[in-house]
Length: 307
Image (cartoon, rainbow, N blue to C red; front, side, top):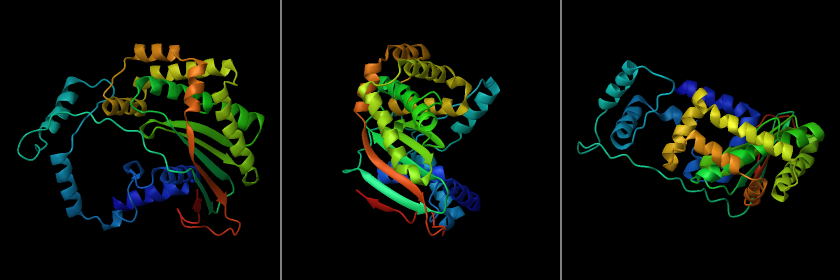
């Protein structure tokens, strides 16, 4: 099992786009718990044995709250079998099961000064990542606007980043954005020719500025609204999105009906998206560049971080 996990970590790091995103998030998170990789630490995994895993499982079952979500349309027998397994778990210390609790997230504090990082590895196509912080995860209405803004900025082929940076200017092989709600952060990522990194960074920042100033086609706005509406409507049809929705409900203590989410989406104006974009601050610029020596570097090395 440890060898399998180590292989997955190595494969993740060999995906240069994923590598760039991970390094950018490391620069943002620092020592904050958000920065603990969910896939494990390759230095720690080989040191774990069966006894250590047993102790960890015992502590987990005795101290951690457990919430189970079943996707799809399970029959009564399936539900009862899951409940029977849950009832067999040992109670917390002292014999009493803890009352349910809601964990409310707090926005991640950004670095004191913006981080600029360059790393060089053996590759042909450069990857660049920009991180913008400033959204507020616990706000349901803010989350609707943030998802809407993501679709307008770079969350689909009908977005400013795609139409301007990739199609019109020809500066990127691929370009996209993603709203990372748990970290109150927007990720903007692109694969570009090494000679055009500076141009691409400027063009990506220009799209953010256009939204701040309201200089975008309203046709794109309504297309982004329709795409955001479709995302909400199809949540029950996709297991990953369903689990993300359920996790967000637990995290924020709010469960918003589809009709309410769509009503909030319909009320969002171009000015509100501009205000949201204006509230964002660029906190990380990360560039993964070709190593001119052509010598492969070890993953996570070879970069220099300068404020």
